[in-house]
Length: 614
Image 1 (spheres, rainbow, N blue to C red):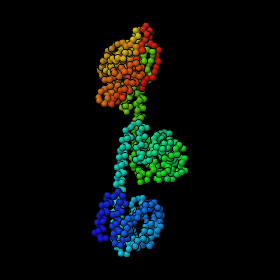
Image 2: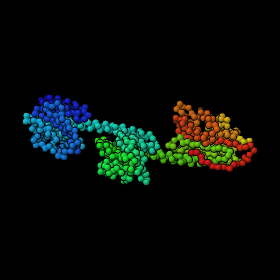
Image 3: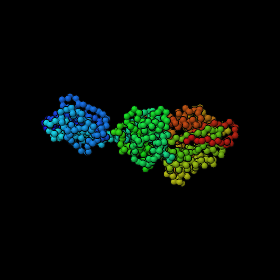
């Protein structure tokens, strides 16, 4: 084979290498040109792993149309001495001097006329090496053969390096996509348990065959979620996460260690993930006998990794992955650290949200009455729905106050805005009105005095409120006296099912000095129901833009005949289901007048206290 012919063959080889997805795809473009070299009778290549494990051998002899291919996993300890360093090594060896124990090519070489084996050994990656050699006779230009072997090996190494690089880039792209998707999925929920379940589900099977997530509590790791590609093994994983002492001790020992640790082989002895029969009891008696990590019919040994979940300088838990796949498909430590960081932030956000939600709800409860008065003259109930706890404490409030003359005062209000300042004004407004109304102050005067107090305190926010008193009358009716300061008008559901609006008016509280408020009076009869509410109810808006206010009278009329508790809860839930936008709090106070027999004693009746709705 002339130099020009070899140059053309080498050019074709480089072109093939640029397109190849596997090194073995270059075989025809390597073997045939080498075999066409004068004096070459056999071309043979081998692939080795872990120094001495023969994975593959391919040989093509002169005059043969098809190669001899051997795929194996045979251990050849004597071949370890052939392992090259970082640079390719070309060697000339007489065929007669080849030892079969270290040279599996020897048997094939003896079948051909060649007397010398010219072989180039070279490293492919950290896990293995390879060789490419030819059997030549005395007519061969050995120096030229060595040069061609070296050039062919250069192409093979470059091809393998390119394939690895493209694989790394593809995996990096897939990892980045997975991390981005994981962040979106985990950040889309602020519920702690749901976030933890998503952390486990996202990683399986893309990252591992199984996953367990633990939260770090003051008393130690607490299992919260597990998943596995096998439903049977998922159940076993859940049991391990809850009960296995080996895993609990391991997680406790790791503490705040930030490095991801991989465990396999003897390191898993005595664990529920061990691949040996001795580990059969380690899963604490799983009913179906499945052991996550047991090799069973899977030829891949089990590996587990444990990553600490750290967010904002504190450890929130850990995630344990269970792998039953080839080593080459195990994720890298950097990827696991990135996934753990994202998971930790999502979990920490959910935990912080949960703490904040509880704090907001707790503070909100303290701004509302814990009990409502009840006698045989009226049926009282309230409903309060927090629009979004993350928006902080709202300014809605309500109360029901028995008065010395036997009447009852109903009040409801709404402070502009949210937060600590709104909460302070809420407490001031409710307790001021309650104190004044308990003393028998009429509604108009009570609102005026509250307005004066707000102006004296130089409150930067305004509020709306409405006060209504129900006073029993000798004819069995009740006198409804209503006074409003810019608040939505109450509605009255009559015993015949009709709905009317109470006429109200008046300036917002906290805006101007020396404001007076006028009262409106009307009578209500037995089984008439007065409904007071904040604008969170009426301003709930559907996707088309319509407000719940437009259908409120119809929805209230449909509740004719129900008690106060049902009316309050039903209207709240209907408004929630109706709105596609708006996150304002909803407060309702409902009073159904039960009436008194004509001529009955109108002095204050004995009171009971019932828990107010929160």
